[in-house]
Length: 296
Image 1 (tube, rainbow, N blue to C red):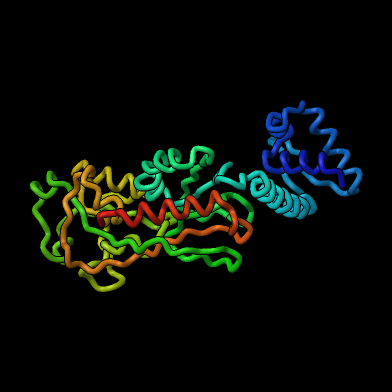
Image 2: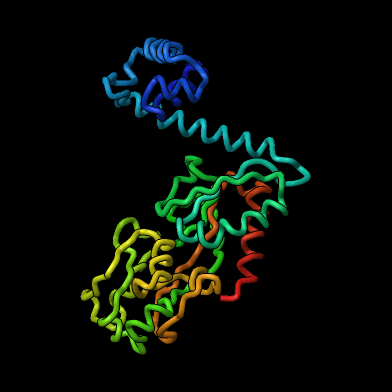
């Protein structure tokens, strides 16, 4: 099979149309279409169903695309390792983590990392679901749970605690709860069950209650950052992680200091193939140094 045709096929499979793939490859739509037709003729199987709304991979096309995606992912990883400087870390580093941790804690510290390692360019992918590191959707991940895949290297970064928080304005209007049972009479801001980034994220709904009888929230929002903003606005009470609750700039009041909350173990994760990457090593060490300085 011709590598150029496979490259075009992969672009079309990912884009879902000849036109969009042509834009990515800087080729005309007709040139892309000819390459796909030639590949189908060489393999003697149809790779796409043609529809007015776009292209859909056939069963044979799905099989080929899985293999091609894996091959190109391996090539991209090899290229990154080969082009990395022997003297100093350099190149692109794709990092994924949850929206809350990435936006609230990590993003404000990227400048310090960039100043220390100016030859490393970073792409930050914030997603509460796990991207596939084996398929090179990202190079490294900061995850709120241990990885389940056996071929991933993991390093424990820290254990996060949760804190019950409200704004001073809310407490002035509604009073301050002194025990978990008091939460029955308050407005709770909860994450909800849409792709929670960590287990037991809505533990506050059952604090001081029998298991299986959760409180309802005045708001459910699938973003810890949005939960913080809602707390700051005076809407209600929420459980926020260390990196949000401990930041003085957030201006929240911590409540119920003796309440029992679950811990979240945070891991630095990357594929075995990147074990010797200088970019990965310096970023890991940077995180460990910054986390060691934390006041919470």
